[in-house]
Length: 248
Image (tube, rainbow, N blue to C red; front, side, top):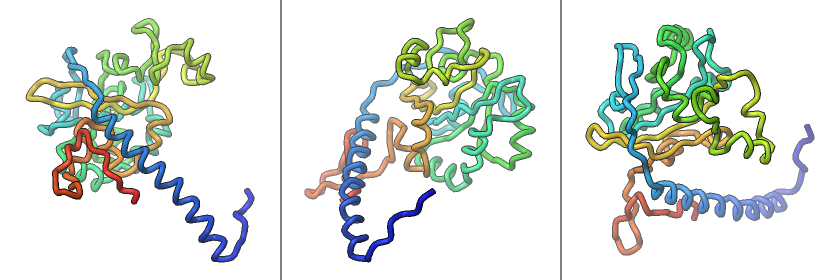
């Protein structure tokens, strides 16, 4: 791999300032995208899903742990596997207590869901030393309904909002290669109003690589970062519609 060109400090500063313009533009675009995401509609979850947790059977509303929002990470772990997906495992390794606490402080719970039986999940979780909530959807249609387990014998195949034909055209058919059922990863976001749960957002594939700290996770949710930004005249900004410029 070649190294960057060596230049004088003044030449470096000129190049850096030019690049900063592009960085600011990207930040503004991301702020607008996040604001537009918060304005997306949502769908009521009608299915009564029953998961297996460390303390027994729970409903989808229980995964919120009493909070207003829920982010589910669809961790790839099929029932017949002895270990979780290496890529998903790397993602889980980076989920810290601090991240979970920061999300909880904004009324948001991050939970993992996989198809493997709870006994396998608990054994693997203990081995890895993870502390995040992790539930088994074994025996339910949850993974199929949210398009992270692909099996045309159960439901029409769709991944990242594309059908098999659309993946062929886009050159991304590699997502659908292999023997069915095929496990994929993703994130799904939910909002709770009392005991009524709404699905607000899901993202898949390389889109998940954009996640980092708690702000990045909160940006996926309907309520966003839940901060009150002040306009110059002192009027509070609605977090669902605002697009503050943090790049200035």
